[in-house]
Picture 1 (cartoon, rainbow, N blue to C red):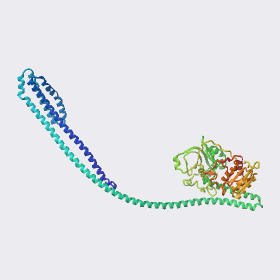
Picture 2: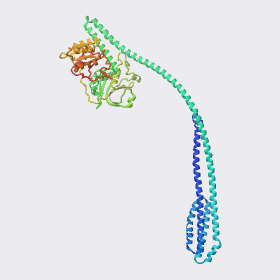
Picture 3: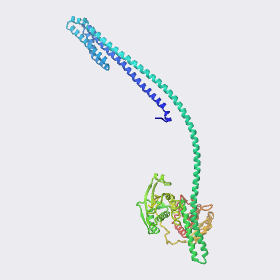
Length: 626
């Protein structure tokens, strides 16, 4: 098996580590052999010492025998007895010391036999001497048996000593050869290590050169990559710009189409009304009604566009979604028709939500109308409420979603459903799959903008031929719920002025100002007017009584909010009603009206203006100083 180039360069290192391992093992082996050599020396010395002790004790026994026989004194027998009493222990120790050597063990047995014979002869001599057989005892000594036994005993001892010396010399020679081999191995390992170090240095230099060359190549490649990324980003920027322009073109085209249709109705109807005003007043009135309807449709279109762009002013309050849905049931049944079955599934213990109740009703109505259009042959519509929690994982997978607790409101139909490519564009303004004249394509985009502006989340689940579910996730409100009663129910009388009330109208657009002044005067109010903030403050300075300041927000110089603050410095109890077609964050921040602000959006009708003015003057418009 062939190794790759990077692995082949590791072979010298592996070989070097192998040599080092052999060196360490050889050193350990040498230490072990030296320990064994020292053990052999100790063994030889021990055997020789035991042999010397045996010989010495037998000689002491002979000496004690002679002294006793020459002098007759018993104290000479003490060394004799002591010498013979220790011989047994010495022979046991000697046998254990040479137990691994059969020849030496045989000699120990022979030595023990000779020692026993010599001891027996000494005892016999002493017994005859003690019994008075002095001559017989002396004859045993002169006869020479004892000397011959001792000579043979010494010969055995010398043989054993010679054997131990021979073994010791052989072991020392072996240890010297082993030490020489280890030294040679150490020298060889040292040489190999030096060669390995030289090779490693050479290989390191080679790798360093390769790394420097690779770094240069990498730098060049990186520069090329940066250039390509820059070119790609430029192309992507152009594509995004083209897509943006395409989206803007689609949006402006849709706006232009719808507005032109509505303006055609308004302009054409007013032109016809002007022509027929004197000859046919009834037809002129019908034309005016037609123009008014077209203008209202244009106002609704503007409101939907503001909703999609999340710029409509909202008045959120704590809302019980169950009560709101329950209150809409009859309206939905009348709007959707008898061929649509409406069912509500309202969760028990539903949390309150903090939202603009009127806009939420519009959103639900939009979703229900879309569901009705998806069920041309009839079907079932289900509105369901529930509590839910969106966790960190879900929030990470969906843009602009904050983890937390939500009130979820589901609108489900059994209609035609939507394929994935339609779901992706469902919230785009002016995008619709309905036929010509059956939809503006702004319904879902308005709902999307409203929910997002309210801090919520919207999700569509749909399959072709299996219906659609739209889920509105509305942020939970922690606190009590208090929904104010509606004052604009059908048939409610239009309120008028009371007790000579005076209203100051401030509007920089002259025609709009005149329209507002005429409308308020038609309701019985006394009206003074100003074209800007400075003129309005001057009017307040000279006008003794002003019950309400009705001001536009967007004006050159001093805006409506600044005017209201300056006016309240003069008259702290002055009530204020703001109006504008676009707030620019003067009284609306993050899409929500500032606390204590009373507001009416342009365009508005006389009835809407009458109701709102009456609410503020009667203290129902929450018009406390912000």
